[in-house]
Image (tube, rainbow, N blue to C red; front, side):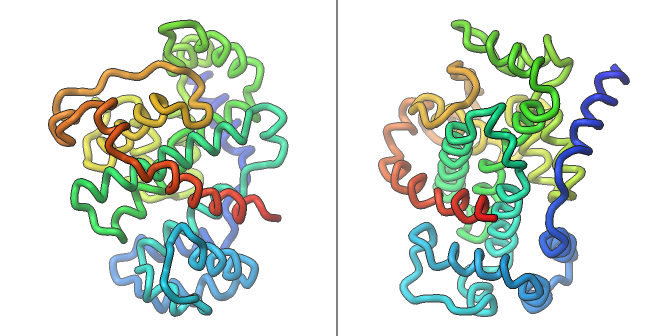
Length: 285
């Protein structure tokens, strides 16, 4: 087992780190007495990143009624948590090496991730989470499968074998990964979250999005259900087609099953389309 962990750690260490400005934003946001002013000052020191955030804030995704021309105004309109998660999401997309597209269908990967992000956010709002708090739900959905990128880049042969096995009817990607690689994309994704110093709730969302026995939270419940809904609706590439069973308590939480919710989110297509701006801006070098 230590050999597996050593190989996973070696792969994670090859992944790029976040830009210094984003690392400082995450560190600051984790402090109890962090102020919007402190956060804004850190972001403003990176003019390229500032421009990306302003373009994001003024996009159809946020749908604000007036143009926002400064990070100061953005922080007031969006709130501290939403601004932090916008910065985190853009940075995560931006640090993925361009070579990943040679090993993984990044178009399909990001479409699935965006759909899970938008759906998790919508489910959180449905359960009464405030808009600023729901930004955590979007970020969790966007990053939940990030471990697949690490596998595809740095353990490509084994990941390709596991992904091929997972295409068989009734197969589970995580079971195939565990059989071939000794660990799952959720395991190595959580290790990457540690490297990036992501907040604990995001790290846990990545670690346990296939294993609800590992942790419990409203965010995880929404993420788990969103993952099944987007597979049911065939958004992008999730790696396999298996709809995992949904625990009764989660069905009770939403008052319906996967099919019911899939039919009860009529604006999901539009939300996903608007969210594409995260990938467009994040990938811009």
